[in-house]
Length: 233
Image (cartoon, rainbow, N blue to C red; front, side):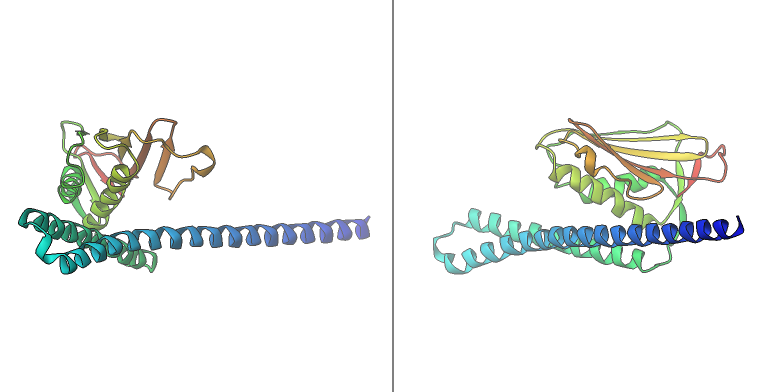
């Protein structure tokens, strides 16, 4: 019986190791797939504004005498808009790199309303023509976060809502607080995500999608609820 126990234990250990190796291999494959998808998306987002800037600047140079003053102003404005978009995109990449490298977050208590307002202000041009409804409790919500990082999070999500939904469709931003947590939901009227691709992006955030809309939510945690309606991210 002792020998049988040793054999069973050995087999169990071998199976455990094989399972761990298999899971590790699957994770590596998935990581490579995600890395490839990310590089493809980054390449597209970098090339699109660059192509527009190059084509527009080339036209200004080659057709200078045939372009009216009004058309010239429109072309210059297009270059400025695409350059600003490219600058923002590169800034986002740098911020993501710093966070992933373990950048220390500069936390401070700030009203959630200010963070959302700052994001909406930065996207004023992109959001033109879209009804944006912000719903929050009458009592101010104060959160302990890195303001720059959280504003960028809102900007990124709102930009995606603009990019992947029909022009003129509404976007809803809703904030609520329960049990020491502040939850921010950003909902659009896009096609949503296929069920197979719905994956939580982090422990404190989630995405839910249906056939007619997508909702991105961020939860800010707090050790305990307080009368100030504060929350810690």
